[in-house]
Length: 70
Image 1 (cartoon, rainbow, N blue to C red):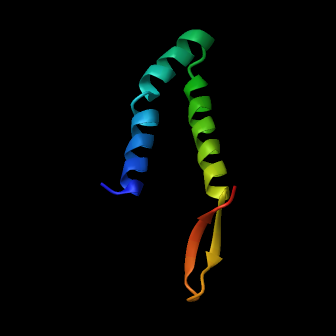
Image 2: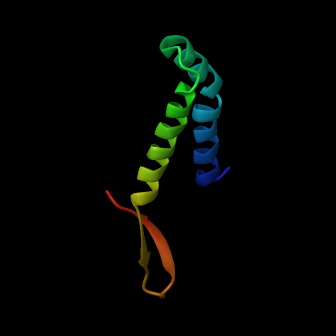
């Protein structure tokens, strides 16, 4: 298993595996049926932040590679 596959599987377990429990808890705590939408919105914002932290740079051969900005 590659590092990319491991990261992908880990993300699926964290978000997909807990989504039903978190959604049920949010509805129970807030009383609003649209509260799971906030869970999805937060997950999307985290993904957007991760996407924006990746910088595309050309290496010495002229090919583009992705580097992480910290």
